[in-house]
Image (cartoon, rainbow, N blue to C red; front, side, top):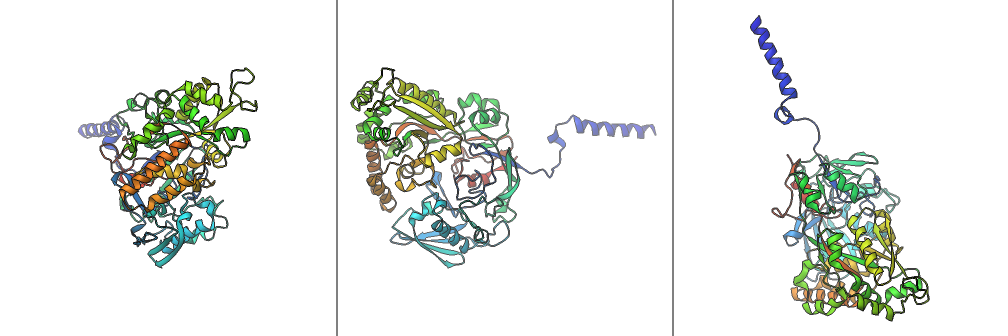
Length: 560
């Protein structure tokens, strides 16, 4: 009896010891708790139940994760096509039509089959409602027809060897849902039906939303995460305070002195900063004040502004050394030095070089003088000359850049004010020309074409398009060159077009390029493996909205 009691006490002791002393990982058995990946693709002022993939205000995990694209072109693999809803495409010999073969067996998240009818409907939708066409796809379309249940053919308005790259950016939505929507422009799509891996909005409130797996995903065996979580992050200060706690898994934001303020906190905190595109000061060429607009339209004024800028100082302070000064007056990224003609670079280098003496001379020649002896330059009529600089609140690097620019312009007698707004208002004010100057970045691609096209194509100056060309400078020569690039049949022809774009835009100093930044990408290895990085460069690692390769990245992740 004594031996039995002793054995019982030993057993109870072991149970208590195992339960309270040994680490959880030693004894725990798998639970039903879902694996949740926390992502911060961008900052938002608030969370709204908006999953309409055609609007600029949709939640940042709408594209790719709810609405899978036809094809993803992998920028780190020489634009290799990664087939998703499509299994192939072919261009006609004259490059004026393109056929897509669609994947069979794909279901929408509500169980209905995905077919060519859905693709046909989605393309026709942007023809009926131009406000939904945020990628200017409609400008390429002449007609679209269904060849079979899994084949469509698109006839283009003009020959375009790169048409597929643009066409696949169109979100494909279910016809059986959207044909019942009375006003697709205002529709928020609160209960989305998609073909992507994460279509179920499990929870949503003022602080976060959680988006879980599609029960009918066609590649379900490749999904190893149960849910995505997007926590509301309003600004850079909020982001930096929280990322060091380990709350986030996959992010893409600016962190000053990233080794000190992030990587040093944990051996699981990592980052990769590939080269990126330009940060520029842009001018509003349709600003309401007539005299101010005439001043902005004068190239001597823009060149004077450019020669006041101390670019390395902006990088050292605003970007904490993460970047290089802009070298090309066109704003073309230093990533593309192989595309740059050194003669063009040197021709316009004086306007990209700090030279306050020459800047003052140019400003004086425009009669922008201090007419009332208050220390500030005035417009020729005597009205005060004030440049407001619009930036998104919470974007620390942009806001610091604006502050430094104010000090630099003060040295030549130009008064500035910094207007900080939430990002949605920032984008809206740019779209409708409600600003004087602003600071923006740009998307990038495999070649400089994406920068030039998104930043200077006058077709992109309608409100539904992103902010990049919202300076409203229209140049027929630039538009013609941009239209010619996709139809160029040789490498030499394409290089020549880029050279002409580089010189034309540099010669007119349409914007003031400030510095080339880096792609912001941070990842936490505490809970997941499979991250893309400089040792595993499978595809672009960005989590930013409408960065299609993020779907490839997501499918590569595995919980520890």
